[in-house]
Image 1 (cartoon, helix red, strand yellow):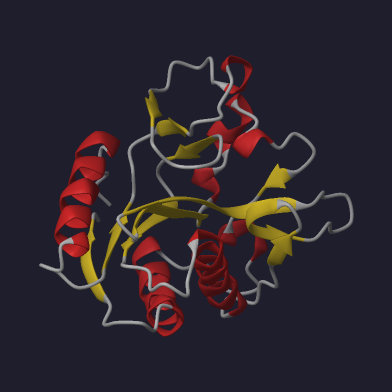
Image 2 (cartoon, one colour):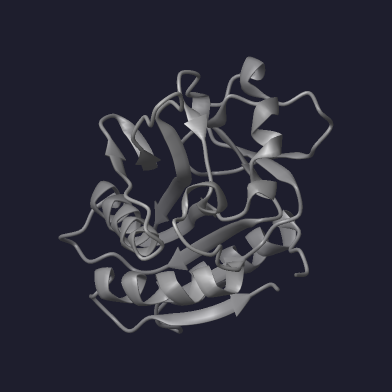
Amino acid sequence: PALSEYEPTWALQRELHARVASGELGPQVLFVQHSPVYTAGHRTSDDQRPTDGTPVVEVDRGGLITYHGPGQLVGYPIVGLPDRVGPLAYVRRLEEAIIRTLRGYGIESGRVAGRTGVWLDPDGWRPERKIAAIGVRVSKRTTLHGFALNVTRASLGPFASIIPCGIADAGVTCIEDEATGGVPTLAETMDAITPHLAELLTWGPFEQTGWSR
């Protein structure tokens, strides 16, 4: 699949965000597979940054540093939040969509108290490990950024260059290493998660706006 550079994709996010926030467009979701890049949230410290030469982009989301690259499905839902749904409740809905998607591949996952994202429990010699990262921003009651779900083993290697999301006592994993059956493609994973996002973000129609193959 072709790769999407982070900066142009972020520019597209901001353009779509402005149109959704103004009411010109309904809720959208942008799916991409990025070229290798690290994104650093507001609280990222110098010692958490990589030293392998991969680009680091400063972004206006919560959280610390994370990696995006080949083999990882990145989803950017751009949706208006009703008054009754705050940022934390929105994040929980994203986590639930990923949890349900993984269950379809025979992977039981869940949440860890105090740690955003989707996690697998310790398993034998393997520690607690993250399979999906989430970092969002809400501006004008409309969401930006989103989730990164590790699909293939290729998505894991660069995590050795950082402490993912600032968490040093846990690992990272991917669908390929955890699924009980065949490994889905990124496009198949996108198709699997979309209905769950649509069901959980029930306050309006939901439309896919792109997929960089």
